[in-house]
Image (cartoon, rainbow, N blue to C red; front, side):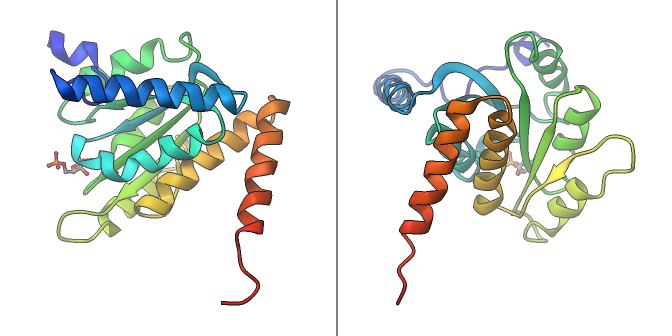
Length: 196
Ligand code: RP5
């Protein structure tokens, strides 16, 4: 279906919401520039449903904080399969180096993504449904040998860490990012009080 192939970005509502979105986008851009990063997305953040965004935005936030731009999409492995293959077909050409995929329930998004790309895939299992995320965790982590998915913890901490690990991988060949990552770790340590 044509609309599956376009893979619109998250949101895209009319009126005030569009204005808000444009403002937030401009803020993120300015923030990344301040931190010495760039606007060209190097990481794709995919999620199976718009309902996953509240959690998956932690991945975007951790990347933004390090000056790494990401391309955020709602793509379901089972509801919009063509959108997934179309997105992955030219992802590398567009500069994407790592894919983060978050999904809930019998979460096959990360596995199917890994089947269609040679890029590293970081899977984030999401809570939801009757089993509280255990279903998604097991679906994501138990990949048969041959097509790897690096799997994170369930929910926000997993999404945040997926963003941070993506940055650490990119930092292997990006000294500026490595420095920002080191500063982030220093600030994180400094923020831990010695006494409660
Ligand atoms: C998965 O099913 C999605 O990743 C989401 O976590 C879950 C429920 O999706 P919705 O019914 O909220 O769209 O595909």
